Image (cartoon, rainbow, N blue to C red; front, side):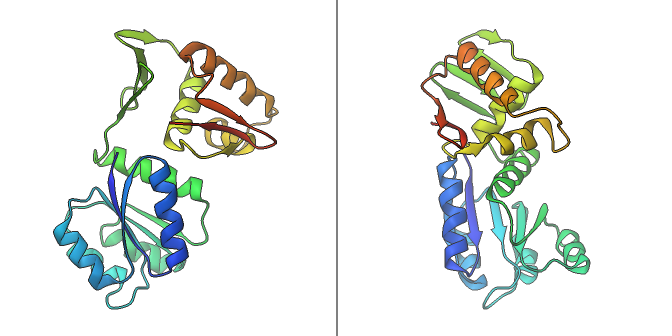
Length: 215
């Protein structure tokens, strides 16, 4: 979907981000210091850079000045308001403070790619086409009518495809945190998506956890 450079000097964090973005369909490259990042930025066509601030050789705040028009998401332990404002004023598209939930990072990556039009907003599988720009779903040329919540749930599953999501996480992402119903509504909507879209074999039930869309 998108080619993403991860600039993070902590190997476990870099590898974890890369693994999860790769699972959701992106192509990832890694750099562990600012100077290596410059080499990759100059030699590779990139759609997004995930950038730490505190890096060997060249800080993220200095590096972003050399990046050009590639979208940037800062992921850093520097949580002060002054740091946030500096990062955003230097041109970052988003600023995420460590520690963070991986689902949040994936969602913000999706939002930035969509906003900057660096990502293909259409995904096709099993005869279905999901146009996330227009929020419409087709089987061939036939439009399939989904309710707003059904579509929102489908988009979350696609954005986080191949990752298991708990019912509670799906509630927070689709119905918002102040939803007062129980998690059985997730099961109902999952069943509706399976029936309407023929995704019985794609949307897997993960025992005692929730659901995963396998693509």
